[in-house]
Image (cartoon, rainbow, N blue to C red; front, side, top):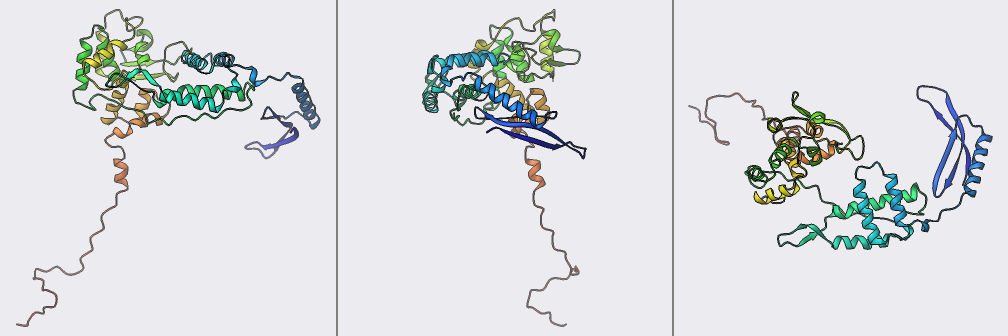
Length: 385
């Protein structure tokens, strides 16, 4: 119901109150409030009447008229500056193949989404294999990520596009705590075995890239995109990582600038690269295949390139590095993301437990005079001499 109201508020630091006339109404299930300080009550009434008249004259868009394909195109246009737009496009193509590109958006109900989710939970991964070479079940994350995108699209259709009367409920699967794998976790010589296998690779850059990844914690994309002029400062011994100015540009995941100090191993690898030190640091492309071959050669269990970043962070904390410093080096947006490594710290919770440890009870003070005479048993009296 539309109403004319007067809003009153007090400005901080001032005694006087400010007032403004306006109106409150409901459009497509959403409350609309409009107040202006220069309006009188009559101005607010006229503005409300004009708004209601305009709404009545606008043609109503039927929710059933928007198909999944049309909604997908509108979503991609809305998210044109998103860095993972290509991945979103692939996910939307997947949904169009599952629900039908011409399916009405309003017909994608909670029941159909639940049925789709059940199918995905029973599906097996094409890439991940078990010991027998069979595909393993999709992880909870692999099921949740597409569902999260679909839920966001449906919310946009309801809240912003106003073409969907309600958003169907989408329940995501509970995901286990993030996995952390570092070299030395299962055997003390894992790092040496991996570097030795990388040195045997036909790709001469593999061992250099892996060494820098293990000693700096750089993400794979940050490492591959290094440029001598933009990122490498040998005089200061730091790697400068810039934020992304455009979605298609290389840079940090968070979009924020950061500097990563070089360990001596990183400095030595960069210094050993052939001159001239101009343009891209690496002359070859992705090392995924050669890295997987090296991992197999080193006989490492469940180790991926991103685990080099976990390796750096784990040993940084285990050797006494602070979580606050690690957050800045890794470029985590919040300290909560870095807390996953906290349990590896040798002092984690130990000092806090020591603070709350109960002190031993004070020994009762001795009030009797100390003598060198022997103590007589209770109940035995000394005979007089």
